[in-house]
Length: 363
Image (cartoon, rainbow, N blue to C red; front, top):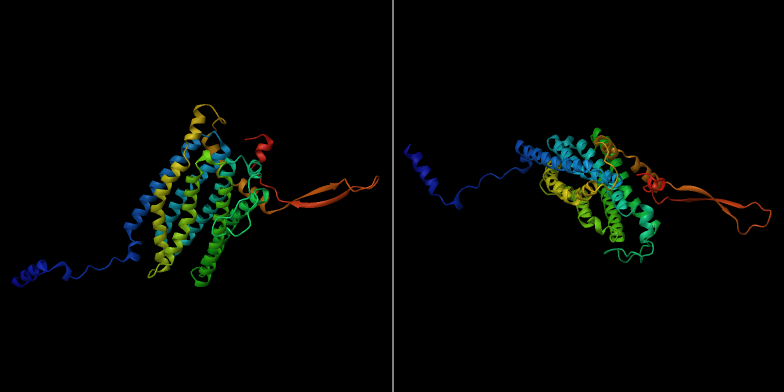
C-alpha cells in the first residue's frame, strides 16, 4: 500500500513533459461512432427545418409561379443533401446508394438555377434581345487568349448546353455507378479514376458556362441580388464536390472512412448553406406583392407543390437545346415566272422553351 501511495505521489509530481502522451484519437473510428451520427442527425434536422420553412413561406406567397417554382426547388437542395448524407454516414461502403440519389437531385438543381436566372432576364428570347447589341464577351483569365463571344442566340445555347450536359452526365454516371457497385467493381481504382476525370470535366464545363452567362447578364440581374445567389449555388454544388475529392485524397485514410467523413461534413455544412439560402432566396419580394395584391392569385399549397416537383420543363428544355428543329424554307427570288419556287430544308436549334407559356399568354 505504501509503495502504491509513493508511486501515485511520484506520478502526480512528474512534469507533464515527461508523462506518456494520451493515445491519438482514431478519426476513422470516430466518424463511425454514435457521437458522429448524433451530430449528423441534429444537423440534418436543423438544415431540413430551415429549408422547409423557407419553402413553405414561398408556397404561402405564391405570386410568381414561373420563378418561384425554381426558387422552391433550389431551397430543397439543402434538406435533400443533408438527409442523403446523414443516411450515408452509417452505411459505410453501401453509402453509394444514398449518394446517387443526392447526386441526381444536384444535377436537377443546376438546371433549375439556370432556368431561374433566365426567368429573371425575362425568358430566353428577351435575354438574347437585351444583350445582343452589347460588345462581345471576353473570356476570363486564364482563357482570355480565346476569341471573344458574341452575345447572341448561339452564346445562350452554348451556356445552356454546357450546363445541361451536367444534368445528363451526373444521373447517367450515377446509374453506371449503381451497376458497378452491384457487381463489386465500384471501388476499383480504374473506375474511380475514370469517374474522377469525367466528373472534373463535366463540373468544370458547367461552372464555366454559368460564369460566362453571369458575366453577360449581370446588368439584367442587378435587382435580384445575383452575387449571393450565384455564390450559394456554386459553393453548394461545385465547392462541396472538390471538397469530397480533397477528402478522398487525404493521406492515411481509407476510402470507406473518407466517404463517411465527407458525408458527415456535408451534414454539418448544410446548416450553414440552409441559412445562406434563406437570405439569398428570401420570400420578401413575393410576400410584398402578395400583400399589395400584385402577381397571380395564390394557389392551393398542394397545387403549388405539384408545380414545383414537375420536371416537364427540364425534359422539354433539354430536348429543344440538343435536338435540332427542321423547317421548310421557300426561295422566291432567283426563279423565273412560271417556275416552281425552290424549296429547301434547314435545321435550327430553338433558343429555348421557357417562353412558350408567355407566347401563349399563360402564366
